[in-house]
Image (tube, each protein chain N blue to C red):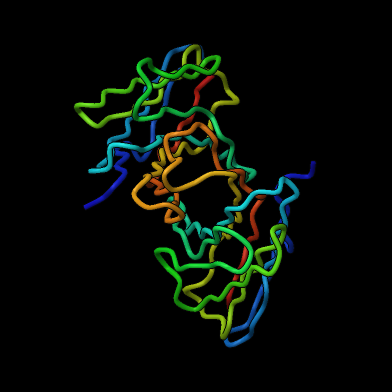
Length: 118
Length: 117
């Protein structure tokens, strides 16, 4: 299994440009997440999905959109990039969530996408 | 209020010594899980250890152990016999079981651990 893969690894955008960050997992996990990590900080949840066709906002959703047409893929779309979106973006997946929160299963993280908006 | 608090922005520890990284959490949900992740300079997030709110014993994984004090809402990570490769950022995170499907990890701000030879 490749686990969680993300592309690209690094990207420079100009202000106002748009792009899609790709995330794919091959573990048949229902739950998928997008986080951003600003320099020297912890991760903050942008959007998450509990299954194909179902997405919901996290803590910092403004400026982003997501879709989940398949179990495997969970792309993150940036519209009109701004310098404040300069960050490292992590995609993660998990087989469980919600009322199963006490179970040991962790979230599996991708390697991250480093985005610089100039 | 912060749900996860890590009060040590940085720590320096001599190689082979034990180190404790502090984490306190805030939740009213009786069902939750606590995680520690390591993030080396390469950037990936590496899962270290998990503690469930209903677990009777403190979790251990090799050189990592979790000092879970439920009444004090603390979940400190203990690394025994530290090694140079332990130098990294360490994040404490919590997953709450409030609503089915409404699940996420809430992260602390991290502690940067530097092991000194």
